[in-house]
Image (cartoon, rainbow, N blue to C red):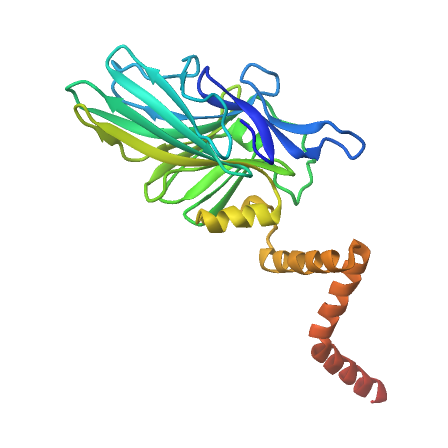
Length: 314
């Protein structure tokens, strides 16, 4: 797959997004080597995204991480051409995925199950992010790096060490989940309007996953379909806020760690960003924003100065 911002590939084994490089970002200021975030399952730094359906019926074969999918049609995913994958079991059930990519960082996955038998089945949709090991982190106490979600408007932040000791699990009606680095976010947005259970756990690998709370009934000679969204992006405020608005994702802006003083730090960011774009220098932008803050609080400061003068005179 490729668009203006990212390039990579989808493994037909497991139908996993397991290779993604950012075109606009270098590993260091002195290097021309681009940042690669996702990696294959068997690599040391394996980091990938999977999705699909599961069923409580043990007699039904469903695709797993070793299943090899087939391509239907074109084999390159762009923002102009979607990609279609298919896997068929020996019981007359076909699993399909249609993956679309926008011009930035959004994958939309429409996954379906087609039944050509005269039996009924229940299926639950799921999505998961798998990371083989803890990446190199800044370990700065005011910056969260690890597993993250907002579930029913509550922000959940779990460090890698916490999940190694105890798994996290919660059922909710809305939200998103993912794994965040200092500069990058890998996130899943479950199907909207349906309850789901989110789990963060560690079993030799870190997993952030969701599974639908209620099953979809696959009727005789019928079809079921679910849609989920995947965002693998740089933590740019305009990008994150843009997706939060366009996709109506509750509190997706908390992907960026604004801290406990969110209501102060975010407006200050917009102010200093405005002056930086106007003046072209962060030093001047800090001076400008400081002057603005002093002007806003001048009446209060002036009152304080007058009180101090009266006290001095007394």
